[in-house]
Length: 315
Image: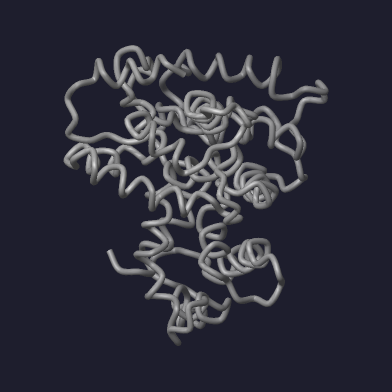
């Protein structure tokens, strides 16, 4: 798959996943779990390790000696302390955990960065993105693959401008990440909702009615009866999606549907880590407090977990 094909796929799959006609298409963006491990510190700290480092990075610490693990943890603490005041707050820990959990997103951006930063200045302008993505295809009135590139470019430009906070049409790496993955950024949520509504709102009246809602998830082949989940979705639309009971979803109702206010796992884990490590109970952590409780934050080759639990219980 060449870059252009990849980007077309990315465009089509950003806010929804393609599915078979009888399978449910899910547009809802849920916060993923921090780990597939059970969160039970009486048994192990594996959940905390995955949450703090990300599952893949956590595995690398399991191969280190306790001394190596502490040394690397100390370097991580320096990164977490964003304002460099010598303390790690719950907010800073929460931001770090969210970043660690989204590593696959940042890796994706890194993999694409060189393709777009054509002048190698560490930034990506709208012109660079447009030229790499669309190039001469905009001059083709009847492309073989059936894509409407001009329409797609207009939509991309709108999203690029939304991601570009300072309005200079030049994206930093963080802004470019927001452009490629808008569902991950609070200030991009309106564009996610707008694009979703445009995809589903076939009659372009600015709302999503029941048939448009169902039609986006399920394509009736005219023969088979509707699956049971389709009937359930009809009930969900009437009872929960259409909050004002006017027979259609507006922008706010669509936002509540696709971007629900989920339980904030990162915030809960940050609070847990501070509570367990804050020896003087001042509500924030020093590097010494974190490294002293290194077994809670990261793994190592240490096998005496019982001794670690004794230290854990002392606090």
